[in-house]
Image (cartoon, rainbow, N blue to C red; front, side, top):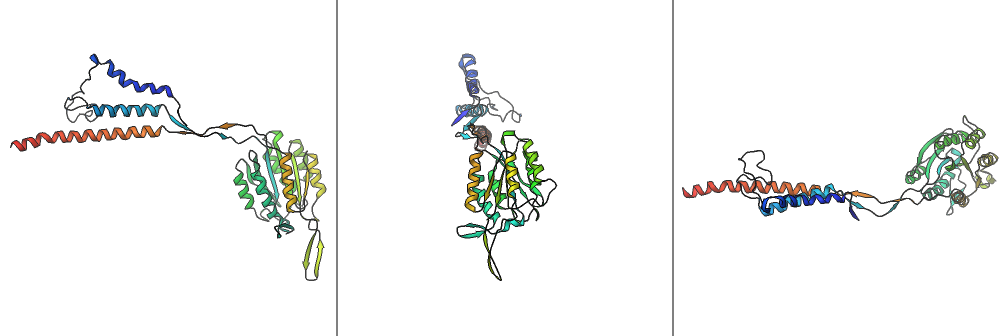
Amino acid sequence: MVSLAYPWLMLLVLVPLLLQWRRPGGQSVDAPLLPVGHWLSDLPGVSRHGSATPLWQKLLLFVIWCLLVLALARPQHVGEQVQLPVSGRDLMLVVDISPSMDEQDMVVQGRSINRLQAVKVVLDDFISQRKGDRLGLILFGTQPYVQVPLTFDLATVKTLMRESGLGMAGRATAIGDAVGLSIKRLRDRPQDQRVVILLTDGANTAGEITPDKATEIAEAASVRLYTIGIGAESMIQRGFLGSRRVNPSRDLDEALLTRMAEQTGGRYFRARSLPELELIYESINQLEPIELEGKFYRPVTELFAWPAGLAALLWLALLLLRHGSSLVKSRQPATKRETNG
């Protein structure tokens, strides 16, 4: 839909008509006579010969005036109604990328994949469903680092999660430092919207802050911790002396993760397989619903440049036509003299 920001300015279209009506007897007045070479002599409406302005030039000047008035009124194209980013949670994803996440005890479509690959598969869908949330991503090993600060740009969060690699942050597991960094990033956000989802497959083996101390800080800052322990409880390991059944999650500190979640009002989840991990993130979607506010806006595209540009082109065309007409008239006397001679 096209509309005008200042429709009342369109009344200026009547100004040339009023000026014409106000002239004595309603008669048109010849353009002023100016000597050739005068700086005003090339302007539309000014004659070198004292003759009246042709009707077609008057009409063209009136069209140019109308276009300029239309540009001043600011025509705009108002688009279809678009929903604003809804008000949701400030949700920080904290993912363990230590080398232990390379354990291939996850299965997708009959094919074994490692734990980090499984996390990427599940988080890709989870992130897509959190429209309206600000999402951030912290990756950690020996040290944590912010891969993506809190943002509405879910596509960027998904892309950088897919590009994360094992061992990028060191070979140990600093759970306390990772939680502490997430709290630091959330402390300026509204208290009832601060959520951290921590995923790891081990125990705290590094860092300056203990997980229990980080949990106390999270509780004081009203940050809810949802903790996820990932890894199968049993798998067949093949070697030179045959096969044996092992527990690939023997280093997982479930007691710690449970304590961290319960102390902050969150929950601990156990992901022994890819389907379980998918259910966990679905459960978190239900526990932390998005609060829709229903705000909408209509995108506006300014169109004033089109009438203004067309007016400039018509003005230039009029100048060129007048100049060409003047050249033709100036040559006519010389041609007559040559003929008479």
